[in-house]
Image (cartoon, rainbow, N blue to C red):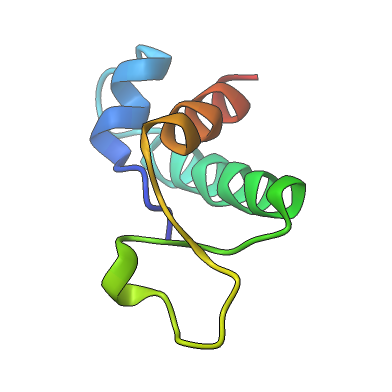
Length: 73
């Protein structure tokens, strides 16, 4: 599940209606995975969600923007 909402992604992509929701969600999940691979870190909703022995990072505006840009590409 992507940490960027479907509503945000659809606004970014200028997609109206619900016909393409499944496809947009697939793109979002893939984009998040690409961003995580690039950073070499898993992303989490906030600092509290990061496991103790993890190299994870809490999602921030820059990561959200990157996910949206990758999704749109």
